[in-house]
Length: 354
Ligand SMILES: *Cc1c(COP(=O)(O)O)cnc(C)c1O
Image (cartoon, rainbow, N blue to C red):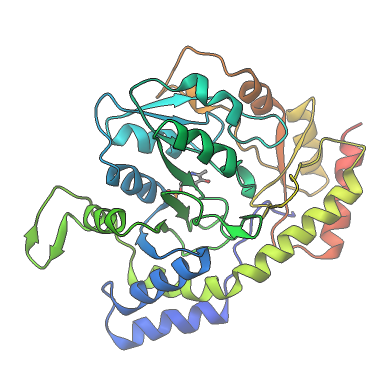
């Protein structure tokens, strides 16, 4: 079976992990600091707070803006549920705005219509590894005095006009879960250029403590572990080559599938890092079953938009998100695929469409 995701870990990760294990110092320390510095550098930003998940990173980033009861954050319903959950953790309300059917990302033209005087921030998601339209989002946010927090959990190394995700907003959040473009097993990070926000994030993610035995506010135990950071350092070295492989795999898939199905769209000047390679089909369950029989796994990201989840149950309509959620299918695009695998995926898709 050709799987949709396959973490590539090996000797380099093992070497870094054994460095930690053999040193006897397994509590968060040198590796975490080193990882924070290197990941901030990678994103083209000043500061990084490493966390134990992407969800924790989102909660930490939003909390650092002082969000609370009555505040609203504008976001997309077509994402992993954490995007909305993190807003709710702060006591704030997610205000959903529909997506652009070509990019699957929040439609910047619809943001202005959703802004009330309670709006405090916009939380775009770079879905599947394609950056949201940050220049437009930043323009609207600035006009209305809103902060911008990126959910970059699928977009490590993605760029707009050569600028990496993490360098184009107030705060950006990453995930290093096992299936992401780079992994620490589980993990996350908040990136910012603002020293004040950095200090606030650091405090919040470390139990509200800046000094041993002194807790100045109520925080969470969200810090990254030393072992995760060791994995992260080894994975970060490989991220560029992983992404190049993903981009190249996507190019091969699109070349083979164009004209047969709706293939991913990449706007001019955007670097899509293909966390997922997503097509659209009419009869999805039949298609997926046929693919399974051809030996190719497929997944659906995401079959239910956030506003329709039972934990939200918001009675509003977002027609583009709803239509996409019924038609999208993710094909394998990960860096472990061989040329043979890619050929097999293309012919399987073409034959399973019939
Ligand atoms: C993975 C992901 C998250 C959550 O990250 P975890 O590390 O699993 O907590 C949030 N948003 C998006 C878009 C994601 O893909």
